[in-house]
Image (spheres, rainbow, N blue to C red):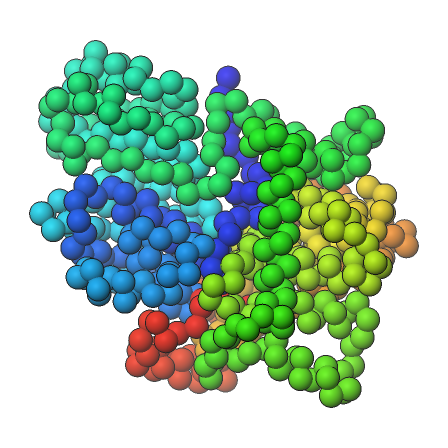
Length: 544
């Protein structure tokens, strides 16, 4: 039995590890471009990216490095590659022409849809229509005119058969040539022929194709590598829990703490050993720590412009004057949260669910663990609980600005952080759920309305509020303040409210704060600067 995909920790929640930017506007487009680049069987001459004029990418174009990310992906870079910010230079050096077009994408109505049209030096063409679905996750819609969905979590072998030269027997031998095939399809389009598709959990040995594809030119065979760290497997087990209520029941039935049940969830989802799951979370924790501290502890350069100042060092100077109003855990959270959003090229960030979001969760959590003299293991346990909360959120909703507004990003981050704090300090499972639900309820109904040139507002205000209130909601839950709504019900309500928001309030920069006169003035100034600057002169696409 094949188990349907479901959210897991290292692909959906704390992934992908990336350069500073937006998970849905930087990492997702980069990954789609990466897959598109693997479709073309010859050296690249031109790339054209078509963006839906009604969509989110058009509304924020360049503000979140969408342009550089798409170009970088086609050139073979993944989101964690620091060369992403030099992608236009790299294309110029390689003699590759770049074009962007704002039009209508007939194949998709998703706000984060993009169509790649690639041309090779010998006249070969390739097209990919895809959607950045949030948190760096993606889904293709069409490959070379054939409707096919892949999320980039497997090896995808494509054999383009325009004249349908392969007979039924040859197609069967093609499928039988590879063990552990998870999916095999033959797609047909009138006048276009057939496309044979195999989805595989392991990198295939393509030499076995030689005797099978004597009628198919080599350039008609494409292999799309997985872009997710956890590759799909036919051995994946069913989802362990979809609500925190069931998660708590499992903890009681198995006599295990919540974080251990979360580890089992990821083992079931990934097929990894317990040691490998723990090791990966430790790696991510180290990246999160660096993300929050590098601006203060390392000799790094923060790219500043009149539209994006160095907030972290401004805060540091303020704190050192003695004029600081906040203190204790809150002041420490602010310090680390500003570090999380510093957006330093070369300092990798971890989403969760927005780009850099795990850094904010780590900021809130580590501020508490340091103040309480807790261990790294306590922090790690908190991160596993945060990941479990995130997995439930991705199961029941789409925690992205384009679908559920800032509730889906800042609000869910705050809920994950609050739950993590209660777990780290040894609170009971009921308080963990109450903390997450209380935090989420406080941030329902928020639009996503980033102002071009608006000093990262209003996004930064919202994520700072969610981050700095996480320990407060944790304390309320520990004090016995019941949330009334179980977490899954709070998520369902937040999802309904978010989806009811009009399109102009869902990360298009067309409504909300963006229509205020001051915001319009900033927009004009920003677009003038954007047109006059070179891509490599622009800061990373990290709004918050």
